[in-house]
Image (cartoon, rainbow, N blue to C red; front, top):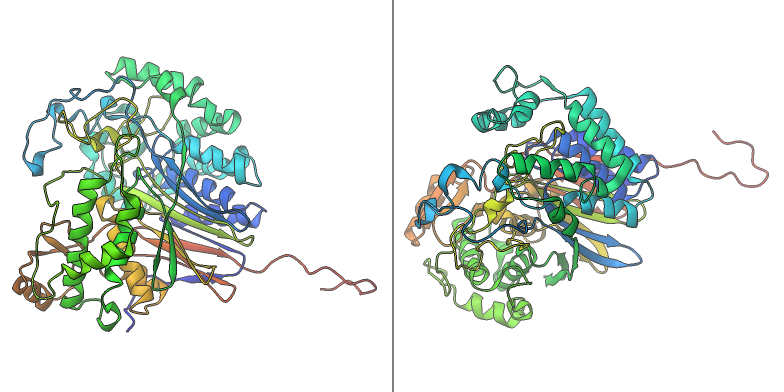
Length: 552
C-alpha cells in the first residue's frame, strides 16, 4: 500500500536538514556546506526559525534535544522552562474545576502578558550545543538569522492565519503589534516582515553568548520590563536556570532500537510503552484506515495515558517506575487486557487535565560525519505570552500555562519546578546503524503521532513521505479524533465498538524526519506545517595522485 502525498521527500549524501520552514532548513544546510557539523546546523536552524516561525519557537522558550555522535553514542538534554522563584500555588485565581475550563484563570494571567512567563532554557541549550560540539562559533551560526530579521522574509499562509487567530492579543502589546500587524491587520501571504530590533538582540547574543540573557544586559532589561508590567521573572531566576543531561529512554520494536528523551518529558516512556504493547498485535495485516487498526491503537493510547497520568512527572518531585513501565512483560499483560471487539476503560483513568500547546516546532539534522541531532522546541501557545519585549523584538513564552492553577495537586506551581511535557525527539537504529530520526509538534498528541508514523513505516511499509503524512488518530480516553481522511464507514464501525469518534482537520502538527539507507539520506516533512527538507550532495574535489595532471 502507498498513500498519495502532498509533498515530496529528497535524498542527499552529505547531509540533510528537515524543519518546519524552508528558509530555516536552507540556512541549516548552508552551514553544513560551509564546514559546520550537525550541531552548528541545528542551532543555526533554531535561530532562523525564531525569525521565520516566531509563533512557535524562540530563545525565550524551552525544549528537548536528542543527539547521537558516532564515537560517543546517545545523549539527551532537558532545556525545559522552569517556574520563576517567586511563583507559588495560589498566584492565579482559577475560574472553574470543570475539565473543559480547568486552566482558565481570572484575567487570563497564565495565558497572556508578563505573569504567564516562565524561565527559559532554549538559548542556554543552543549556545551549549555549538560551544561543546560544534565546529563554528555562536557568532557564525547566528549570522543568517540576523540578516533575515534585518532584511525581512515573506509571510506564508500558515503564519498569516496564526497571526489572524491571535490578532486581538498581539495588538495589546506595542512591540508585538509593530512587528506582526500591518496597520492593525494580519499580513497577507507574500507580505514581508522585518524585525530590526530582534536583529539587534541576536547581535548582542552573537557578541556576548548566552550570558547576554542569563545574567547580562538583556536579562536585566527583561527584569526591568517585568517589574514595570506585573511580571515576577527576575535576573536571579535567569542566572539560576540550568540545562540537564538526562538518561535517554531506550526500547526495541520488532528489531528497531528506539532512543528518545526521558522525564521531565513523558514522550520517550509513552512512545516505547505504546510500541511494546502494539508489538503483540499483527499491525502489518491492516491498512492505515482500517477500523480494526484504529480500535487497537486507540485502546493502547488509553492504556498508556492512564499510566502517564498516574506515574510520570518532574523526576525531581516524582519517583517514576521507568523500568516497570518499559517492561515487555508488563506490555504483554496490558495487551491481553484489550478486547478486540469493544472499547474499554482502563485502570488509572481518573481525569488529569493538562494544558500543553500544539504550537511547537521540531527539526532534525544529519551530517556527513554521522552526527544526528533532533530537537523539539516551544514558546508554548502561538506567539507565547504575545509579549515581544520593548526594544528587543523577542517574544516571551507563556509556559506558566502548563502548570495546574489549582493548589495541592501534582502539577501545581512550585518555584523552579518544570512541568510535564510530551516532546518526543527520537532516533532509531537498526542493526547498530542509523535508521531514522523524527519528531513533531502537537502537545499531548506528539508521542502518539510519532508512534503512528513508525507503524506506517515499519509495519505498513510506507515510504518516508507517506509515513509522515499518513492520517492520524488520537485519544486519551474520551473521544477519538480522526483526521478527515477516515471514511464515514470507519466512524460507524468504531461507534459499533463503543467508541466516540469525531472528525478533525489535523492531529498534532508538522512532522519531519530523516531516514538512512545504503549511504543515502532521505528527508521528508508533512503537509500540516510549512515543513521542508533540504539536502547537501556532491562533495569536495578528489585529491590528485602523484604525477597526475590536474584533473577537471
